[in-house]
Image: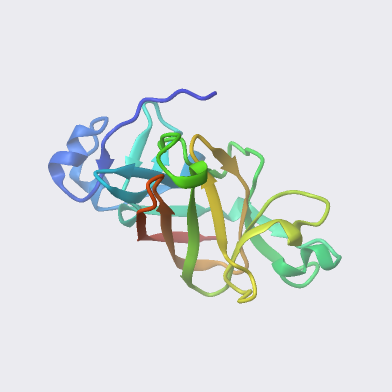
Length: 216
C-alpha cells in the first residue's frame, strides 16, 4: 500500500498557495503537470460533499490541486501509433497517430491515476461512488481504457461513443491506472461528475469539476 502526506488543496487564494510546499501565487494561478505520478481523478468526501481533486504525487510531500488550477499535459513523446484490428478501432484508423498517457509508468510522461484512497470504507453503499465523463471539448476525443486482450472492451470513458455509459465505479481505498488517449493534438477541456449514495440511503452529488489538457 502506498503512503503519502496529504496536503492542502491549491484553490485560488494566495494564502493557500503559499501554504503548500512553498508554492507561489503564480503557481496558484495555473500549474502545468507533464511528468510523474498524478492522480487526475482523486475522489474525496468531506463536510457532506463529494469533491474531485488532482493529487500530484510526483513531488514529496504530494500536493492536491483544484482541477481548475491545473493544466495536464500530454507531451509530444506521448505520440502513439494506432495498431491494426477492431480492438483498437476506438482510437482511430490503424497507423494514425494519437497521444497516449500510458497505463504503465513512463517516467518521461504524465502517469494519470484514479483514486478512491481518501474515501472511508462504510461511508457509501457498496463502498463505491460513480465518476462520469459528462463532456469533452477539443479537437478530438478522449478515451480511457485498460490494457487487455481487446482494449476496446475495457473502456471506462469514451467521449466519441454515446452508447457507452461513460461511468466508472471508484471504490473506497482504490488506486487504479489506465491509458488516457487523445485522438488529436491541441487543447481539451473535460468535465467529470462524481456522485454516490451514503450508507443511510442519502444521495450525494453529482459534483462536477472541469479539467484542462494540453496535448502534443
